[in-house]
Length: 163
Image (cartoon, rainbow, N blue to C red; front, side):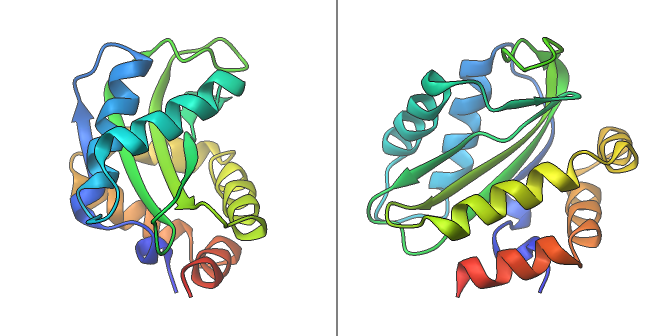
């Protein structure tokens, strides 16, 4: 199974016009909340922001993977945002972030959560993937690229996390 088990087209945004890390997290929270009935946008935002307070989820290379745990969530869910321009994200390399992959997992998720994060970090180390995502002209293209790149190990990890 591909990443589409965690990510769906309605939670993929191309060219988002946000000017700060906080606004990027707010947009991610809004997208993640759009598919939830038992979890509010503010709960999601608080979870993502709480994790950021522990240390930035900016991996470097213009990529961030904000993530959090929320009670009441049945399965892991994700959103992807390509920002129109990079924002200061306190990333490890101090470079602006323009690719944001937000992940939300159930409160009790542990190993699956860590496996997904490790696999995402590995996938986003690929310069070719990052460049292709930056050059994508639409959310549809982003979804195709993310799905195509995750047929291997990441797809397997994501499959186990949503079952």
